[in-house]
Every structure is written in structure tokens, then in C-alpha cells.
Length: 421
Image (cartoon, rainbow, N blue to C red; front, side):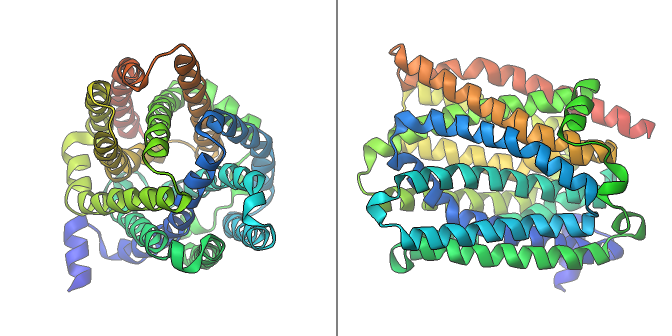
């Protein structure tokens, strides 16, 4: 009965159900592991002072640029069935190292460790999620992706709800280091599920290797990006999303830091926000994601988040309070995860495999973090000029108008290229 309900709700064919469910489980494990440590990252970032957050964003970009060529070089030499599980096992090993460091270093001397952890979690999540969606785009075509990505995203939402609940309920009971240890076990399970999932993909998919299709490394991805107006438009869309997210993130940091004093209270607030974001995301994905993508098209769905952002920043401009922040942040992030992200990932189903694994990596790392860096720098500069949270919120509105226009353009472009393939 459950299988029949899932197939009817998401319009899934019999042969698609096993790989779709395993993919949903994989996303559950990845996001559960991440959302266990995400509140710790946010709290550790604030521990060094809000004024130092732009430097952490600069460090994020620097680490991305340093590691991207290494990531690309490894991807060209290893078969996909080896490369992808190895990446998650590498992240798990890093998590274990942070666990041991937090156990050995006294809490009062962990400021530098906290900053390193903040940067590492940002980098790890970016690549873990980007690689997952590249794997999905490679395994499911455009038509299947439109129907299946909603179900797969539901698995991630459940994992995020579960992970944020663990963080919220157990942070004071088990302590921060032990939460990091718990997170590492979910990454280990993710690596094992990837191995199983590779055997369920169609023969034409599961026998491919990154090595056979990807020529070059990080610079290949950059070259592919600048050669394609379509990919550049995707990059522009993601850049403006990142820019607006960073503006809101810094407003959040200012408001939360002023509202709460203890580190545990701040971490609990972030965990509770994550819980409501992911609970709302789950409900939207179950009842609306697939239907909206089918009815409005990819372009129509991509424009929803910019519209919500315009409305939210306008209200924040008039009332930059904790209550408004929480409602806006929860609604915006839930809309991104439930609608914008699945629709955005379908944009890669019509590009070559080089572009999936190379140009997509360049977009999800360098372009995305470039938006982060510009947003952090702009926020810091505007604050130094005496512009308050209200003024900065109003300044964030115009870029969102361009962002929405790019969403409509991408939807039309994808539809046209998909028809020509």
C-alpha cells in the first residue's frame, strides 16, 4: 500500500521506485549528518564575534579555490563507483578528527578550532550536496528528474528534520563533541548506500565512470562554464541566491547575537529554526513540489524564491526584529529546499557529463562562494558606513529582481534545449 501511494503521489514507474527510494535514503543520511553539526557551526562562528564572520567567508572561498583543483584531479582518475563513496569516507574521517580535537583541547582554548570547524563544515556540506545532486542528475534524465527529484528531496528533508531534532534535544545532554561523533556514523552509512545505489542504476548509467567522461580538472569546469551561456545563467542565478542569503545570514547573526547570551541558547535557537525549516520543507515536498514543477514549469518555480525574498527583505526593512527574521528565514529556506533546489538541479539534466561533474562543481563552489564573499564584504562595508539592518534589507531588494528574471530565462532555455535533444 505504501509503494502504491508513493508511486501515485510522485508519478513513479515500477522500475524507478527502488533507485528513487535508495536515493532518498542516501539524501536522508547526508543531510541528517550535516544538520547534527550545523547548529554547532553557527554557534562557533558567533563565538569569534559577528564582526569576524566576513573573514570566515573569505576563508571559505580560499579553501574552495585551493581544494577544487585537487577535487577535479581525483575525479578524472578514479572511477565513479570508487570516487563518490571515497569522498564521503574522507568527510567522515575529518569528522572523527574534529571529535578527538574537541575532546582533547580545553573548551576555553577552542576559538581557533571553532573557526576551522566553521570553514570545514561549510566546505564539506557544499561538496557533499553538490556531488549528490550531480550523481542524481547523472542517474536520472530530465523527464525522470522532474518526477523523482521531489521524492528524493523528501528523503533529505526527513534527514534534516531528524538531524536538527537530535541537535536540539541532545546538545546539552551528550555535549558538542559527541554530536560530531554521531554525525560521522551517518556519513559512513551514506558511503555504504552509494555502493548499493550504484548497482540499482540502469546499465548505461552505473557502468560509466567519471574518468571516462571528465577530461581535465577544475580549469576544465571553468572553461565549460564560460563557453556556455546556459551554464553562465545558472551561475548567475546561484550567485544572486548566495548574495541574498548572505545578507540575510548576517542580519540573522546580528539579531540572534543581541537576543541571546549563552552559547547553548544560541545553538538551540539555530537548531529549532532548522527543525521548523525542514518540517515545512517536508510538507511542501509531499504536497506541492512535484505538482508545481509540472504545472508551472521549471522557470515558474525558480521565480518563487526571488519573489519571496523581495517581500521578506521589504518587511525586514520596516521591522528588523527577531520574530520577523525567524518567519522570513524559515519560509525562505523551506522554499529553497522544497522548490527552488529540486527545480534548479533539473537544469543540469540536459548538459553533458563533463558539465555535470566539472562545470557544476565550479558553479557550486567558486561561483556560490563568490556570492557569499561579495555579500559578506558588502554587508561589512555598508555597516561601516553607518547603514543599519533596515537600510541593508532594502538594498537587498533590487538584486532579487534580476535574480527572478534569470529564473524565467533558465526555464525557457531548458525547455527549448530539452526539446532539441
